[in-house]
Image (tube, rainbow, N blue to C red; front, side, top):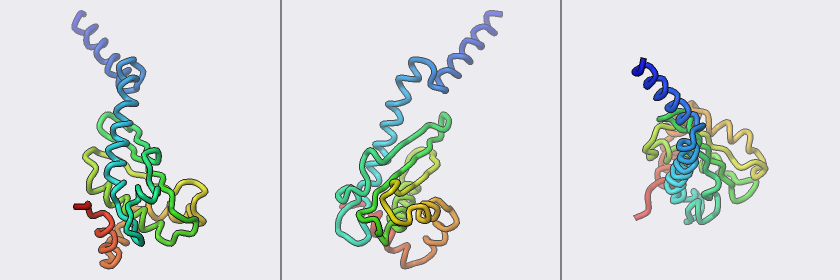
Length: 160
């Protein structure tokens, strides 16, 4: 009976911890999500703009606040990026989204699901672009194009 009680107690505390309802889990979870978000931001801030010699961070296309990480379960995370193109009619917004996706798929050290969006109200065709950059088949097809792949590779290349 003591063994069953101990197992029940452990199971309950584990459930509360995983759901973020225990004090220890509740205090720990936001800190972990903030650390993961900073880890993501550190990866994307150095991506180069396809047209300009600047990084996305320098152009304020990405900022720390544009990255959100949510825990799906103990080992999986949902990473949400909301980037802001430099102008509302930016013709390279889809390419920037593709660069973000490629860099994170290659470099994120934890299991994740990735959602990339243009910040609401910052681009004239944001809905269409959001669909394109979150469609696995379209992303795969784009990366099969050698010219596009070369541009993406140059943008995601780490600075020396």
